[in-house]
Image (cartoon, rainbow, N blue to C red; front, side, top):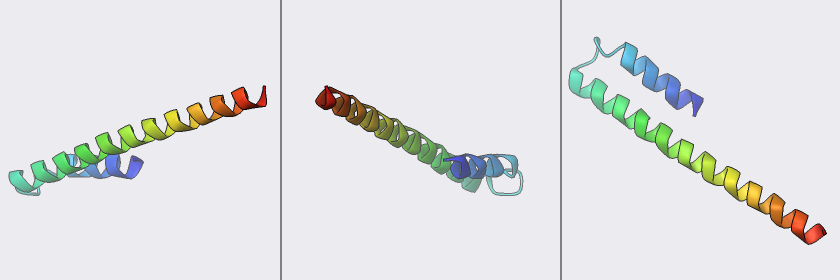
Length: 60
């Protein structure tokens, strides 16, 4: 996710070099990618947390 954020930042900082349409598209693309990755990471953490709870319940 850090790489996607960094890429978005580079495109934001370099938007004067690119056409407005290209820069906006790439910034939007990386923004969507960051959102997707954030949601996926949250879901994986929830799954792992629930798995640990289930393991603890089974051990008792």
